[in-house]
Image (cartoon, rainbow, N blue to C red; front, side, top):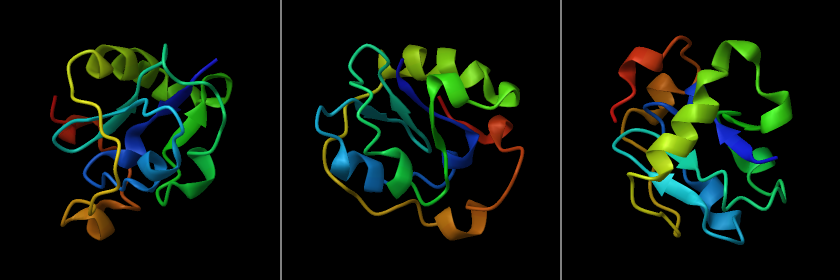
Length: 107
């Protein structure tokens, strides 16, 4: 089992999760973060620190976000690793509570 970053992260990209990850399994895209499923050790440190509640254990991912399992795996193979905390996107607070953001994901 791995943890999955889901839709609430889109256009926010808070990196509190990156700061607590002991194995640097987060990867950074233009407006979204993903977790590499083969590198995640399932420690769970990232889930409680996510301000948007975007991180889920694979087994608890809401069914409407099931596609994010594949997206995390796919995009982790394309994007660079992120290992230090950065400032969130400038629009993060505006988009933090928004729903249905999938169309806004920039690959």
